[in-house]
Length: 238
Image (tube, rainbow, N blue to C red; front, side):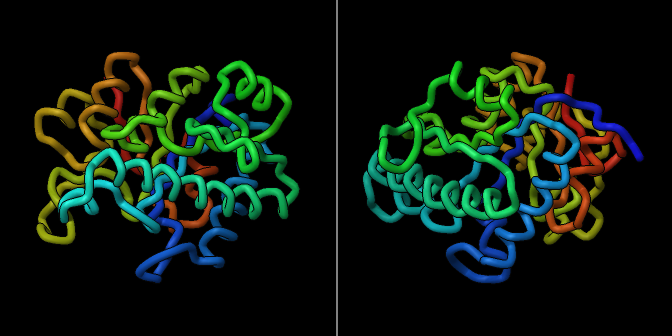
């Protein structure tokens, strides 16, 4: 059996991935599936941190486009990520995976406050840590929060689980001739404005030389394959 290539990773999940075929909310089948996929790498002895988006419940940018104040809208989006984090924590703990949520917004009855040293201590003790509420600041996406937290905990790689096989040079849904990119550099992502993560997140990853792996969450076993060094999805680095 292939051995894991990493000791500590950060997994970024989009909120949309959790709603499955529904138009809104959390699919119980998908949350169970995701928890089982995470359990498969937890069993390898990997230290796992997670950042979950909130787009399946509320998207701040969309709300601000129809007149809501962007700061208020983004704060609502942060709260949506907490809802998703609680659902994922429950699913993981039902599978025997000890999990802690740390929130960038204080809500002591629901989650621990984000404290870096405590988060690292949880990881060292074999607990999964879910970072909720983004960075705690409006105008920053959960992609940026994922890169920031990955840097803070010294994760070796950021895994971005998506609904497609990886990164293309254009939208494969619109352009049937879109070219799949197996390896790509940060600067190429920025120059071509490839829509894999927001530009702030890519810039931050580039400045700190954090490698990114983009892969399809829907294909069972993909997270484990990436962890074990198989050539799955797209790799972004320098």
